[in-house]
Amino acid sequence: SKEKRALYIIFGATGDLASRKLYPALYRLYSKGYLKEHFAVIGTARREWSDEYYQNIVKEAVDSISDSEADAEAFSSHFRYQSHNVNDSEHYHTLKNLADSLDTKYDIQGNRIFYLSMSPNFFGTITKHLRDQKLVTENGFNRVIIEKPFGTDFESSQHLNNEINDSFDENQLYRIDHYLGKEMVQTILALRFSNRLIKESWNSDSLSSIQVTLSEDLGVEERGGYYDKSGALRDMVQNHILQIVSLLTMDEPDSYTTENVRKEKLAVLKSLKRPNVAEDFVRGQYSFSDNGNLKAYRDEEKVSADSMTETYVAGKVTVDTDKWRDVPIYIRTGKRMKEKTSRVDVLWKKTDQQIFDEGDSILTIHISPDEGIELQLNDKKIGPGMEIQPVSLEAMRSKEMLKARPEAYEKLLLDVLNGDETHFAHWGEVAASWKYVDFIREAWNKDLENIPFYTACSMGPKEADDLLAKDNQKWLYNP
Ligand code: NAD
Image (cartoon, rainbow, N blue to C red; front, side, top):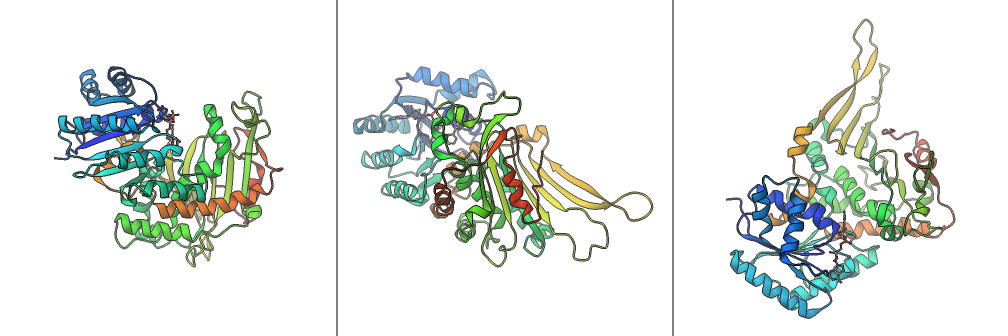
């Protein structure tokens, strides 16, 4: 049977992420039979909640997706709440007793998944206590899921990692990068390595540029306090964008195993060329919208009035290997852009001879909100002569398919249950990405006067267009 046994302990169970993502994801695993009788969840956080209150929160969180009221009821009956201060040793003792008794009650056989869904400041304390107060079992698996942000630069991430490693080994750690759980991000390797057509021309002889766009239409909303210290480079480039870049440019692994995939991704991340920041990277910050309806970033709540934090980054990334050196990889991400979209556009060079008046050949991988692939090719226009016209071959996932397909958190939580680490960020990858991003940050820190502004609801500052124009390129996605 596909049923798995696991006791979850969620730190930060009253939080936004837990209700919005984790409980629904666990419910889907339950309704699909991966979790059945032999599982339990202990939610912990500072608030004093009763089990009953907590179970109601869980029921509410799965209300819109549950098969029936009875099902939601049965599911939430596996949940317990324990109020908990992560700094207090005594509390771990209580937690251990509860965990042991639920383990017996549901015959879970010692399998534990610790989900750290709270500020990384606490990760070290929590993992140490889990080990010292013997919440880690001897007889089953013990896995730790860690949310972002994993540090704020290389040094702090290394410190964090060392702290966690005092209690857990790398192969017990699952660092969430939810982009890696997205169907269309996982599709990248399938497209690249199972189509000779694509595989054979995925190189600097054939490709003109690769463009990665992760744009958001929202501003910072109520997260100004966190965001003002972070900025787009740390919040989006260090993790999601560089992970996508590594999937787009990694060598074909010897076989599709976690170890081989990680090895090839790491090789790419280690060979990222240190950019000429002034030439190759552009930051920006949103100002108010043309109609004045949307606030400037500096006017947002909990954002300092003279903030130099970038809400936008565009850059030219170079993978410094013979294979990739000559293919510019343009990336951009930002808040308050014109549209919310995540996509990859790959542009081929024109043919050497060009006996026809050919247009662009472009592969687009739509990651979200649309999901699917689109290939733009040159076709012959019907009629006399040899007039060329673009044609688009689309394989977009239908509404029904999107409704049925597992959400990123569901996929990732299932991977954790199965002990599959392929779609999680390995320490080596995290370290290499931080070093790259730190290099850019340091250059920007030397100039705390000048940051280009862009109008809210635009695709970023003019400088981001100039960046590509210098190379005789342009952004392929231009809503
Ligand atoms: P949140 O602020 O809504 O919740 C934080 C939780 O931590 C609460 O349950 C709170 O009670 C608990 N907590 C704080 N201090 C505590 C203490 N001393 N002892 C015990 N419990 C304590 O945060 P969130 O949005 O749910 O995010 C959780 C984590 O996931 C954060 O690290 C965040 O960066 C990360 N994350 C969140 C999202 C998201 O969409 N919300 C996305 C990506 C990553």
